[in-house]
Amino acid sequence: MTERLRLGVNIDHVATLRNARGGQHPDTVRAARMAVAAGADGITIHLREDRRHIRDDDVERLAREITQPINLEMAATVEMVRIAVAARPHAACLVPEKRTELTTEGGLDAAGLRGILAPVVRTLADAGIQVALFVDPDERQLKAAQELGAPAVELHTGTYCNATGAARAAELTRLACAAAACARLGLECHAGHGLDFENVAPIAGLPQVVELNIGHFLVGEALFVGLDQAIRRMRGIMDQARAEPRR
Ligand code: PXP
Image (tube, rainbow, N blue to C red; front, side, top):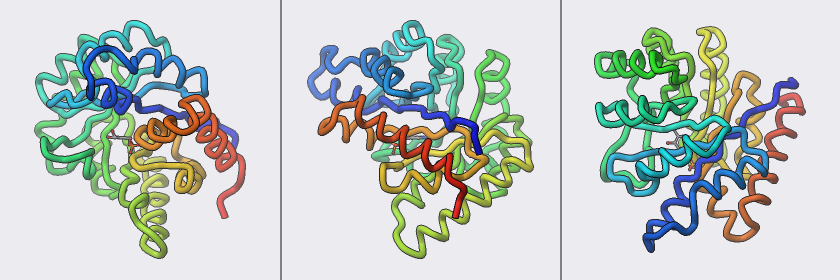
């Protein structure tokens, strides 16, 4: 297993901290540059309907100033599609979004929302944006993603991260089966949500997973060790898990 696992660093919570006081500090473009220097392969941002962290001008500045791939997480709404098509990020990950949630709570119901998702996937793809659907590790959802023509999915790792003991082991098995199903269905497999130093290795060791998106933990850890060190350590754990065969 030699392929380098990509790391997308989600910098939403750099913007959360900035927004607590307004102004420009800490700056998202500076954080993105530092993340890339520390080993991030791309920068992930979620422009939410309520703009609680990333704002429209962050999307514009990052798209203009960062040469590494930008992955825009977005709800499948007319407004977000318009913004994505104008900004032309490398990739867009369609996520479900509820106003009252603290963070993305579950995967997208790709199977139930085909009518809404089909034109969105098509419009983004026509604009040259690689589309991923953020889904739970459930084969029905993966099949729906494939039928919708999405080239990639991001598996929701939140349940795995929040679980302990046997429940975590069972969720890891679900994720492993879903990652294998992605390969059978011809879907590029990404994963993310809730990953940290302690829980990332088994996910990084899944051979079909080619990209992890990690944010909240890294930005929090940056308070103690700096963004550079936090990302370098995460990169190291991911690379080691990738190099070792899964036990
Ligand atoms: N992937 C998706 C689709 C997400 O919505 C998020 C949270 O914005 C992440 C990954 C990153 O999750 P976390 O901040 O818990 O690392």
